[in-house]
Length: 343
Length: 250
Image 1 (cartoon, each protein chain N blue to C red):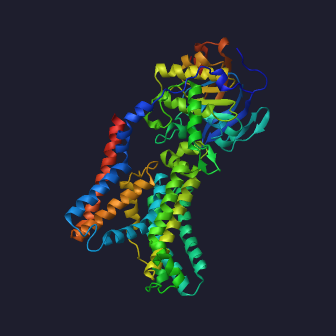
Image 2 (cartoon, chains in turn yellow, red; image 1 turned 90 degrees about the vertical axis):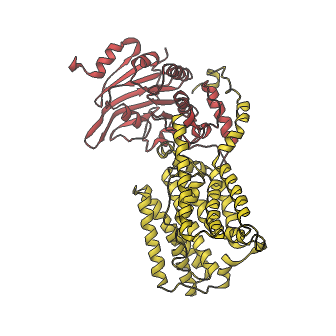
Image 3 (spheres, each protein chain N blue to C red; image 1 turned 180 degrees about the vertical axis):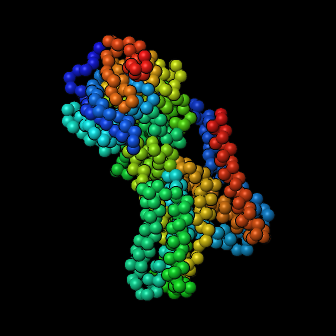
């Protein structure tokens, strides 16, 4: 039917070689990457703070403080990983706090009433994913604002958690359920296991799969992605459901660890995770960011809080320091973008 | 000059479209052949964009029908039009600025292994081939398209269309509007080369010089209605301009 393009457009030369150019700018490119800057910043932070106090890194008994810090952070990375996917896709989700608490309480109530563990867990995931689906459906099909939508579902889920607990958090769960949060197979505590499994999975999904490519395209230019056949609404809805499922998992693991499902187990996790991801290079406008970056951003925030405690900074000032760091990160980003735009 | 050979690849009959009270397009007929360039011209609001969006499946006509190679078709979305061999280069280019050249070329149709995993190596290879075939200068397949010039960006958008499987018709909405003189010339040359390869091309343009330098036939729209179609060899820029602005004010 049509002549082959090659035969018609003969004499086409391959694009000129750029290997020399790229080698020369390799170092500069690496240093320009947010992840590399943050990695250096994190290491520098550890070095400086361990000079100021031995209690940060190794005293009084071999890295105890660091271990506790990492376990706490591992719990948050369960939510961080899909949150990065959502942010890269141009959305964000405040409702995770409500979903964590709601799922913990609902699963706990079922367990205390003697419902078999698998059924209680599946019910918990169903409740969580329902919230995720409502979020996704509302912001795509109904074109509702994601800030207000997820604030609304946050409060609804939080209300369900409080209502279902009736003032007495369900507690004393079967041993098999507790092992979801308390065990340490192969000497590694459960929360770390979840991080070890989920983070590489999320890195791989975002960087290597078609779904990951479509997340970047959806966040980068939603209209263009749609015109080229990317199912942008589906990308967004699936991302919201993944965040909600992860929040549900976190809720159950918290309940298992504490052997009690308080309706206010987490408070501020949503903003901490989003802030960590943004410090790590995720743009709230979408299209940019990596799991590595989000992880390093969250690590920096976690270490900052931890170091403040170890160094005896007043709790009143700790949150203030976090706020300043967040503003500096966002400000640096805006400055870099303006430079690019004008130059 | 090879033009209007055999059956038109794409035909529109009585195409109409309204947006609320605005009648954007009223009973427009058109024929598009392979191996020729059809220019669509008209003033702002004449219905050019609406017409091309119907041809590319973005809008659905309220009335009228489309035929591909004589068979009636309905394009429920741009995907369906693409499957029928109609590729579109949108005026805003529909590029994702924060992603690289290769990803933009294959957005929505990434080469995969086992359906889910993007075959990055094949994607880069194919991208080099597409860009090489177009004979345009883009230094790297891994540079973000937001950092490229207007002409390079236009080339990538055209490359998307040319590399589409079984593309027979390419629709280009204002391909030279955002470009300088030199880059416009390159894009026009590229359009002529694509025609030589047997593709049918629909070009929307405001620029009469560009229209006359590439088009075989010129279709004029005014206020959503078809004014007429002229062969370039049988008309003058003056006549076309008169058709665009309407006889009543002359």
